[in-house]
Amino acid sequence: MKTLIELFLIFAKVGLFTVGGGYAMIPLITQEIVQRSWLTLEGVIDIIAISEMTPGPFAINSATFIGVRQMGLIGGASSTLGVVMPSFIIVVFIAKYFTKFKDHPVVKSVLSGLRPAVIGLITSSAFMIAKKAFIGEGAGSLLASINWKSLIIFALALAGILKLKIHPAILIILCGVLGVILFAWL
Amino acid sequence: MESSTLKKSLKLFTVFFKIGAFTFGGGLAMIPYIEREIVDKHKWIKSEDIIDIFAIAQSVPGVIAVNSSVFVGYRVAGLLGAFSATLGVVLPSYIIISIIALFLYNFKEYPYVTEAFYGIQAGVAALMCHVVFKLGKSGIKNGYALILAIAAFLAVTFFGIPAIPVLLTAGVLGLVVMTINGRKNKGEENR
Image (cartoon, rainbow over all chains, first blue to last red; front, side, top):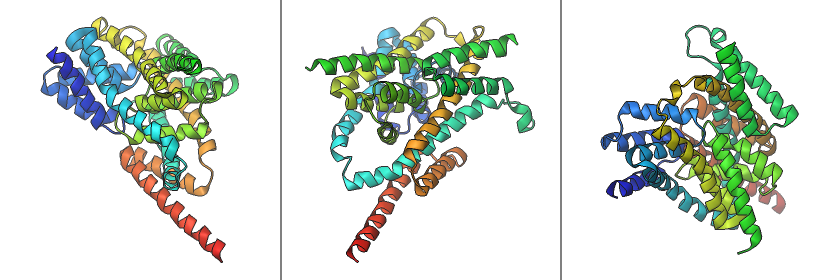
């Protein structure tokens, strides 16, 4: 029971004190978890790798993982609930009042600056993902390290989105299959 | 309780379950799904409003994916909607990660997992590029906005500046620019 509450509280703290989401949470999670020797540093790196290769937000994945490893399914539920709770309360509160204030001149002005910046951030995220997908870690010139197989999948996927309007979920499955065909069998 | 709220909440749960089950690559990577399901298919929220929601989701504490799910859910169907969307987006992670943590700790070493992941990464890149163009078209309407978007992109991508200071600066800039413009317009009216 003590661990269960501890799991909840630790991840509530992680949820409450990290702004910017995802990898911004790693330092706090690492600090809390390694300190309690629930997991070694290698364990944390493992979770990051597993989180990248599975769907879902990083913070949820690591909360669930650590919780389940500590106390099984209930532990996982407790830590996941913990990491979600602050978000839920804060955002419900904001959403409730946002509709009221969104036409206020000050809010409008701030949003007029935020909107383009968010598009810039989304572009940055797209750029990072594309870079990771296309450029191998091998040394040498940029051209030599480009992963052509990934580029082919990217082009096919883009064509599928634009011409066939494939649903994103179907697209992900197809790309996974294409990955196995191109990388494992060819 | 209105039956339409209940219906919408159930729908929100299934939509966000799908989003949780197929989003690779962090909170912002869920935008293509939200565009497709919430904006295009159900027409619950307008595309411009989605940008506002993600602006707020990034500026407040917590997981971006959860923040935006709560916000979208609340806008569509109130508190029950927020709850359904959140449960939906979290549940797939919980199920998948529990299975991995309990039974498949070494799943990375299973055959084809890495190869499939390479393919998925390229697919996510395509989804994200598409959504950047789509949002750019609806969200950037003048040179000032374009410069701000490019500046934010460069700051985060190449100078490693965290998202929060970038958003703060952009918000203040928006306030300053709009105030100056407002004054100018007023001055011209008075003349």
